[in-house]
Length: 115
Image 1 (cartoon, rainbow, N blue to C red):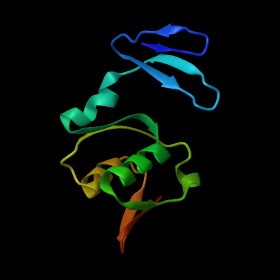
Image 2 (cartoon, one colour):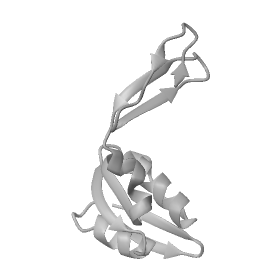
Image 3 (cartoon, helix red, strand yellow):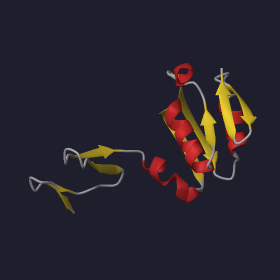
């Protein structure tokens, strides 16, 4: 069990998540889609209504790549998609660009996204 400063007890049920803030020592309990947190065990990459910036950060981390883009052009873009981990970054970008959201260019050791 986890206890807060005021000795509250937190017990997690299935499909729940607990977060702790070191800054203000605040604990919050949420109901979540556990598939988003366990997808790696099934070799899946899942984006569920994620802001474009978060998708790019995840792709950069997962594929150890640098992706450049103008955040202002993608300010209101959100992505929902599911991929198998065996798919390459280029295969994922080819799917994500289909709705006409962007084009990309591979240049040296980075990928540049543009509208």
